Picture 1 (cartoon, rainbow, N blue to C red):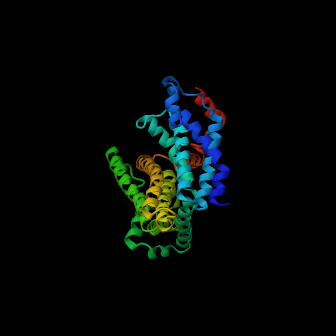
Picture 2 (cartoon, helix red, strand yellow):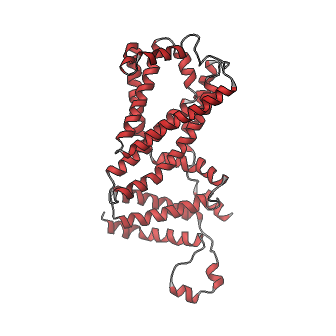
Picture 3 (cartoon, rainbow, N blue to C red):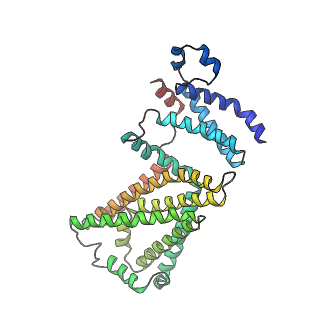
Length: 350
């Protein structure tokens, strides 16, 4: 189907959506005849809007936008669809919320972030593979031959891991003061956000930088896990990382996915200039990074105040860790999905 045929077939739906949006936003069609003949009271009157129809047209416009982008249709056509879907999205989900404050933050956490992560699912899959595959391969190699870790780390680093997670572990098994916990909390924030920023910002090098940091961190984590398992320190290690890793590892993959989105925009800008493509990609990827920051803050708090707690049995940590992984998966997989048409209609009627 040519762009002209595509527009001819679907333009009536777009016009209908635009008319509904104008009516819902309290605007009138910009015709000189209307301005001359309509009375002021009539121009200000807001007619009722069919919320169910609006939501249906919004979903159809989103489908048309995806098709237009995939088929590389003219930029004018895609821009019109982008504007329509953006207006409809704002109206359906943000109409009654302030631009800043608690309402906007709640919207960001409960809707925007999980929706944006799902919209990047292709990049997320690639980032997950770049991170998980090296982790498993090197973990298996170090489990089979603990000496393999020396190909990735020096002997002093390996001895430090033995001291941390071996019998009489220090500081993992050592009671810490509240002051030390807060110091470690600050350290973990700095360290974790540094890794996340590396994976994201390195995407500006055509995505190669993001891929490198994903693979590098996967190799490091897999080497440590495989080595400590082979040495018989697996329980101390896994009980320590199981809870905060749900947030930390997920955040690393998310930041890598956001970086890959930037790199893809630079390498394949389509009909946009590279700068325009980068600006467009970053406006979407930055929402994912908001989620990365939130996850890393949670991971730092859990790691500082819970993971190192000596009084908590490993079995309890495993149970809490499993619950955290389930929570992260449910949040990213189902939170913020569009409401049913009936809910939208009831909200607009109210």
